[in-house]
Length: 107
Image (cartoon, rainbow, N blue to C red; front, side, top):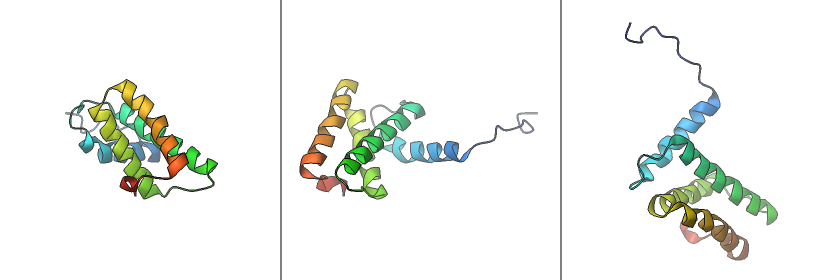
């Protein structure tokens, strides 16, 4: 009856974390508002893992709050640029980090 008694699919902690992540970054999308949840998660995972690997290679650890700020920057880059630019920008920013440290805007 109107779906009230339908058995809901159990959600895992990962499902909840993904949902929170998408809800945190989706408001930053001004031009590409129809970006899928999966694409947002892909951007966040790509950026976080890339910066974490780079920091490990330097013997450093980037705090979670800073990783969140970095991801916010890249969500905005994705929103305002084409896919090709976005894919080139990630390694560029990793090189900047490896050679000069984190940008002040990320801190």
